[in-house]
Amino acid sequence: MEPTAPVFDIQRFSLHDGPGVRSLVFIKGCTLHCPWCQNPESQASRPVIAFYADRCQESFECAAVCPNRAIRVEGYRVDHERCDLCARCVAACAYGALRLIGEHLTPTQLVDKLLVDLPYYENSGGGVTFTGGEPTLYPDFMRRVLELCKAVGIHTNLETAGTFSWAKWEPILAMLDLIYFDLKILDAELHEAHLGHGLSRIMENAANLTRRGFPVEFRMALVPGYTDTPANIVAASDFLHRLGYGAVHLLAYHNMGEAKIDIIQGTQPKLGLTRYSDESWRELVRMFRERGIEVLNESP
Image 1 (spheres, rainbow, N blue to C red):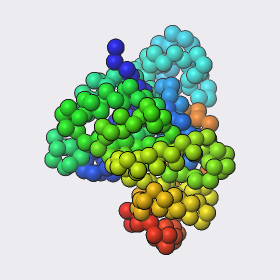
Image 2 (image 1 turned 180 degrees about the vertical axis):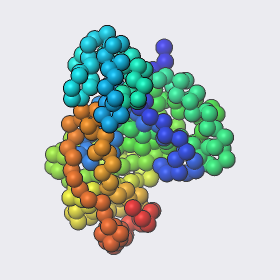
Image 3 (image 1 turned 120 degrees about the horizontal axis):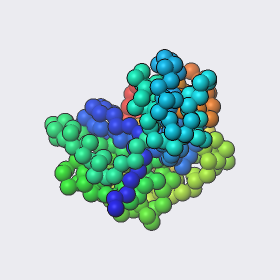
């Protein structure tokens, strides 16, 4: 029997997250709980029925087909404790107010979906990027997916926060064409307070990747008050230098993920932070460059 993983989106024709035209495969489940997460629907591994209140016309066809009486008349439409994810309500809603986020796919099912775009990958030097969530939660699934991609020549990239088991993942990582490794908070106490445990493993895995010549590139999301402090920028720059790696992709914070919190009844806080101005972004870039780190992207 093939392993499965909960895939919650496939975004096609992306020009970011790796070279060329790419498909982004979003997988549910994460080992960290970043307060600024742009995909709050990815954090829990279990699929969920999302409710878009602005689309609901209160026809309650969803209630008519629900075998578990999990549809509420008022407030958030779905009682998650009663819901068994049969998704009959999703099919019954003519207005798209309900959506199943997370579908368990086998490697064969997933790659069959990706093969539709094979000509775009070949013509642009693109491929597939696995993101989430944290794809490394599913080693057996990912190993088989990468085998299938490799067999047809699809370029593969993995985006990871680095909390994986090195012993389990080293042979799988060797199958990838590119690895995007995210740095966040480099202070152990602050990391645990805001994101969860695992910083020592993250740093060890980053060192293993660079020491052994894996095709890794480092990224860092800059979030006001969390990752963009002078102390964290110094720590990240010094860490990259210790790895012998003098470059980073910087990602600017935006709050678009907050709009997704309510549709899943998520518990992630709404930070209410403002986006960087051009001037403030240039200052952050300057801070990295003063520490001898090349910034691989000029604009937020």
